Image (cartoon, rainbow, N blue to C red; front, side, top):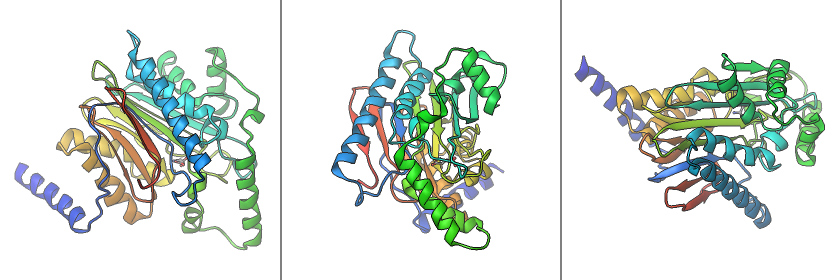
Length: 344
Ligand code: ASP
């Protein structure tokens, strides 16, 4: 039985190698915190000024996260929350301030956070007035007996717990509004129904900028979190993978921490974050390899575009993506920061 299992595992992995679908992303050792910013503009398209801004926000997020973790009682959860808050406050990413619009012209945000030691988790979906949805996810985890709150209920919890509440207009940005107008115009020109393949093609990278973080603290405890405005032009009420524990976010000290970005419907169906972690946990597959198996080996053939960042229980940071260049960055125990925008 055991031999059969190993043979099947090796065969599956060999199949991936033979099909040369390995993403061959570098692995960075000794990482305390890693972040992603979804899929930003193509390397060829990004202007030097924009590039500088992305790098600056990543560095700020990593430093904020590391500082939060280096306090005497600082934890990986503190690191994840602090880093994501910085990215939520920046209009550059599709999360918080820079969230994309629904087709009705609203900003509906989703976020989640999970602790690898206890498997506690919290998330919010479809929120419109919470300045930092990641903090609301944490409040759900720590101050309610539940895991997931939606819409008004989530907003009431956040208000009651003293989080920053803003007018929905806080999330209006010129760039995202223009993206919506362009899309509306395109849709008007088109007749007939939009098929899934069509709508997927339309998930253009300029609109992908979901943010996420994975962290490992001094006690070796892992955490993961993800925050997003969802997919641009989504129907009102649509919820993606980011607030779904096991799809867009997962952390287990015995397997690893994962945060995802991409076509959420696929990430939900394939339970991507959980699948990656349990391959490492139960099968002993190295986490970067497990990520490739799922993202490149399973998701890509199915047509689900996207990627993940992963952090192993030993602090190895890596990413896997089945489409061009996820924006990502990490900080190691020695304070060294690495930022990778697209294919560097
Ligand atoms: N995964 C997100 C969602 O489907 C979108 C993204 O990552 O850009 O809501």
